[in-house]
Image (cartoon, helix red, strand yellow):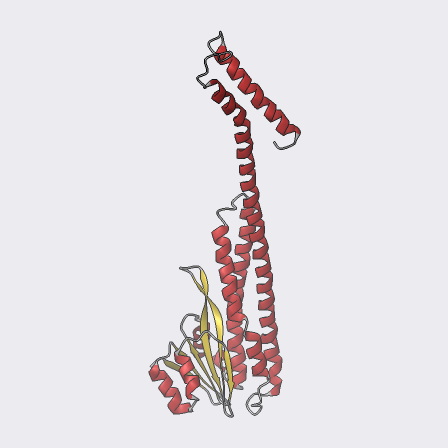
Amino acid sequence: MRIEQIKTKQLLWINITKPTRKEIDYLQKNYQFHHLDLEDCLVKIQRPQFSEYHNYIFFILTFPFYNNQTREIVSSEVDFFIGSKYLITINDGLNDTVNDFFKEIKNNDYNKKQHMSSHPVNLLYAVLQRLQSHTFPMLDHVSEDIESIEKRIFKGEEKRVVKEILHIKRNIVNLRKIMQAHKNIIKKLMNTHTKFFMPNQINIYFTNILDRTKDIWDILETQKENINTFQETNESLISYKLNEIMRILTVISVILIPANLIASIFGMNARFMPIVNQPYDFQVILSIMLAMMLAFILYFRKKDWL
């Protein structure tokens, strides 16, 4: 059974990783949670939710997890059951933050006394704070990627960074989807009507969680604006360079038109063709071509097209 627990006189913390039917049946038997809540723990729903009952609160939050192999930020789900004497956390095993915190408390008496000697809401606050703190390094990493993109764009690597820009935009979109519901869930948690086990004085702690949630969202908004701006800049530079290439090719084509015309004229099989079969005929024809090409070049420079 994948159930670990820490128990003190004041509080019980049960932590479950990658739950199976066996663990869910155990919770159903010992705590009589609503069967729909328990079923949600078995399925990765990727959708935050909140349910309040007369004796417990159940809610789901998603947190970001960085996949080193794919370099993609994906969603990791954590489910919470909180009652007057217990906190139950269920995670999908992707994000180790909850499991690491659980081990810290279990293996350290000081941490156990600090977090397991008061109300379960205090422990819930500590868990949520750890999960939020785990998000900030990912935000910093995205910001560093955006700065790198900015430098590479102005080094002339416009074509090479197109894929990187799309990769960063995907991670920002994923982060926004993961974090967008946190504010509402925390507000519902603070406004719960089950006042007998959710003390009013704890709201000051959850206000801090709420403020950090807003800070994360503000950072994501800034990152979204920055990467969109750099994408537009990169596309403008690529378009500018492409236009320059097309302009040069067009000018070259126009300059060569007179030479092609002269060559076509003197290539006709006319009986009385001037200059042809005369001394220095090739040099004369070539000079005419060069003179016309030079005239076009001077005209284009005068018009500031070159």
